[in-house]
Amino acid sequence: MTQIRERTVLFADLRGSTALFETLGNAEATSVVTHTVNRVAQAVSECHGRLIKTLGDGLMAVFDAPRDGVHAAIRMHELLERVAAMGRQHGASSGLRALRMQVALARGEVVEMNGDCFGDAVNVAARLLDHAGDNETLITEEVLLGLPSAQTSRFRSLDLIAVRGRAEPVHVHVLNQAHHGDIAAATQFGEVVQAIEPDGIRLQWMDLDRVFDIESMPIVLGRSVQATYCITDGRVSRSHARIDWHGGSFSVTDLSYNGTFVRFSDDAEIVSLKRGSCTLHGSGVIGLGSPPIDATSPTVRFEVLHFADTEPQGLGLHHPRI
Image 1 (cartoon, rainbow, N blue to C red):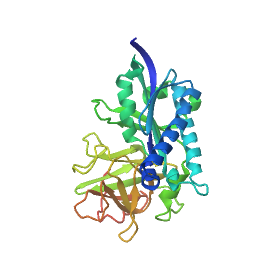
Image 2: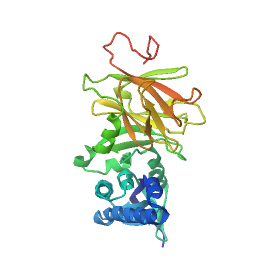
Image 3: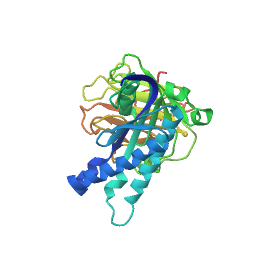
Image 4: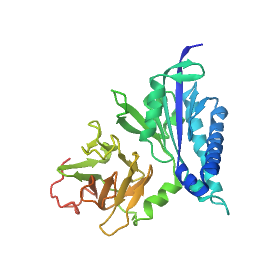
C-alpha cells in the first residue's frame, strides 16, 4: 500500500570502521560494526520512530514528530559514546575509540511504499550527511520549525548550504554539543592561548583574497560555484570543508572524502582531518585533498584577525578586503 505522509527522515552514518577492519580483520570487524549499528538503532524505537533499513555502517529511520527525531539523534550519540568507551578498557580494540557518527534530519512529504520511503526529504537527509563533521547532527529549517523552543535553543544556523542534486540550497542548522575528542585533536598540534576573541578570518588562494567577519559564518570551501569560498581545482570536492565560529574561536571541519590538512607553520606537524575538526589560531595553511607540502596542491592560507591590530601579519598582504 502506498501512502504520502509528512515525516521527519533521519540518516545516520558510522565513521572510523576502516580502522577496525585493519586491526581486527574482516570477520570480526564486520561483527563489531553490525553490533554497533544495531546498538545505535535502539534509539529509533526508544524515541517512537520506525527503522526503515540499515545501510552497512549506517541506518535510515522516520519519525512523526521532529522532536522525536532530534531526541533519537542525541540518543544515538550517547549510545555510540558507550561503545567507544569500551575501546578504552584493557584488552579492547583501539579501533572502537575511532568510531564517530554523523546524523542528518530533514522533513517533508514522504512516499511510503513496500516498507521503504521516497521523496525530497529522504534525498536531502541522505545528502546532508556529506556536510556533517564527526559527531555532528545537522537538521533542515523544516525540522527546526517543528521543535519546541527548549530544543531550538540547542541549534545554531549554518545558513544556506548547496546540497548535491538539488537546485535550491537548504537552510541547515547544527546541534551544539561538546565533543571531548574534537577538543583534544584541535589542541594537540599547537598551543591555543586564551586571549581576546578574534574578529574575523582572512583566506587567500591564488588571487582570491577575502576577509570574513564573525557574522559571515559559516564559510564553505569547495569547488561548487555556490560555495562561500570557491576554489576551482579538480582535486577539491564541491563542498570540501567548512569554517565555523563557535565558543569564541574559528574551527575548520572536513566534509570531503580526500581529507583536509592544516599546518600552523612551515616546520609544524600537519593536522590530518578526516571528517574531523580543528581549531584555527594564528596563521597557517589549509590543504584541500592533499597535504600542503606539494607546491601544486590547492592550499588556502588563513590568518585569524583582530581588527584592532594595525596590520594583519603572515600573508604578505597589506590591505584586507571585506
